[in-house]
Length: 338
Ligand code: CP3
Image (cartoon, rainbow, N blue to C red; front, side):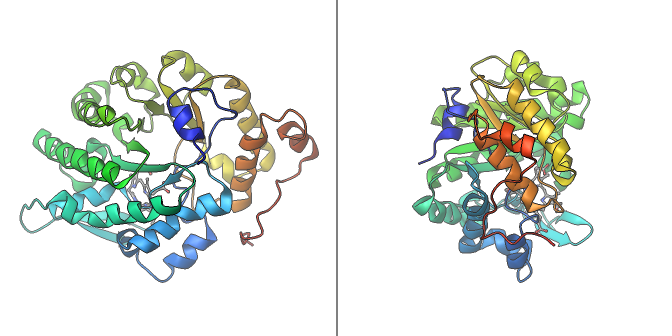
């Protein structure tokens, strides 16, 4: 079992930083697009053998150090009778039900448990389960009143307990939109609900990472919640964040996903800068500051992963690769984009 991620989350020493990427099992992978061509997104996440197969793609093809369950933060809205409405060009919308309902979480989302159980049979890396931050989920449901934030939080905690029971090794909470709130609204609409989630899940012993965009302004408030780890975007340098976040809380981030779409030279410089600045630090997980963009060339992602994996090798590793400008060896199973 590759336990680099779990060790880094616990701020224990590791031979190199673990790497996984937000949206690693998505549209930038030709293999994902091939499966997606025949099924709707909702069908994929709701069909355990397909969801498990897609979860495995970036682990098997790209060598990620963790798998993240193929699902979506918005499935929790199905508990309240909302339906996915996905149209190309418009992205995801939630359709509200005719009347208010509350389904049993285990019954409504049993397909997620089944996917996790299937995955745990053969997985050699940790499996990350996840949920949305209640505030972020509420914005898609267009229900940001406190009583709805409460309801979503309660359902989310039940949902996470179900994921843990089914076998996930870590949890990440995506409160993607919380950082867009002003300080007072952040205190009122996001923080209290994140706190309830951390307080409910941490005692299970399963690590909890909090992620959001634009959250570097709220480091102090987030640290006070005592999550296992905090995941940031690229608004601040990782080394600066390491100084702000106490040593017992791990940090994750924070390459700008746009850099994976541009020249390899710029990608090299920035990747190396992050790795250099975090050298010897405990509790560091390499990731992007947000999801992999759909038009990202697979080769660039391969290069990034190899770069992080080779970094600790002083000879023949990243320095040499940068000097020679060589891309990493290609995985023959990956069909590069034309
Ligand atoms: O990271 C992973 O690979 C795991 C799976 C995952 C998805 N969405 C798959 C997905 C995770 C962790 C998410 C989180 C998510 N979903 C967030 C929080 C993170 C973030 O991106 O800020 C949010 C806000 C959502 C809601 C959502 N899902 C939107 C707004 C959209 C449409 C926009 C878009 O990116 O297409 C989705 C769709 C979605 N979720 C896709 C995938 C692979 C694309 C579906 C497809 O067209 O095939």
